[in-house]
Length: 402
Image (cartoon, rainbow, N blue to C red; front, side, top):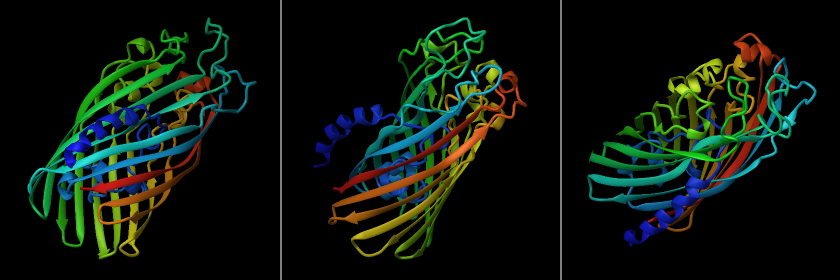
């Protein structure tokens, strides 16, 4: 029966790769499946479903054969009020014209024997998109006419295949090979204040990286840890004049705890670090062709309560401070990846021993940043620029144990 699942998983890969995404923890999603999304994205120490291997490849060793499909939607409200010497201050606050997006993931886990398991998952790698009616930068001094500096889109998708070794019931170890895809289009200005040669045309890039993890069951306490290398991407050839290098997915490392306080109640907590400052195209300062992002710590807390054999309810909170400093606001006004808090909830309905349906919802309250004009020349000439970002959305997941 499990062999029949391969064409289904491969056929849904295109769906996962085509889903636009917007910023949550910087440019990355805060979660991957309906279950962990309902608990603030926490899950490094405890397997939830086949998408859990995107968090920690060792968790493939805690599951038997199963498949899961998650599909949903989210809404993003973003505004830009560009001010200062570089901006046309008469435009005022603008709302991004693009607000609603599909979301989802798909995964499967295969038990090869008592000690080895194989997991595969397609999931959104993040990204972001804005399109404004008016440009960020004034026409004066650019030497350009027409539409420019008012739109950008980056989409990302990853496919992680994990192999896990479970030498005993108390421990498992795993490694993933991650294949990544991203595309981009934009009409932003270069650091030389000229429209990009990319002319808002689509360009794509491919990359690869690895993730390593371990999971340990210590009675009432579960512990998990992971390290992900950067996902090294090709450079966008059409947009070499915008960035000093490829837009790699940054290295990450983290630790998770799962406390089983009763047979029916679990408390989960994850802490991870996202190394945005090590990505040359992202961490480099704006005058040198980057965005000036900093390292981002992320805390995820979640809880679940099994009310009865049929129903489980969940709640969570995810917090990651904006990786964009206030004095980098103007440089990042087209890409307001400043979400910080995520409040989440969710539930699972077990249809029978093989099938279950899960749902989750989240709200990321509006966050606002204003450029004080005390930074580099972009900040000084964009003094007073304000950006905001708010999101909400949800997922439905169908899980099949085989």
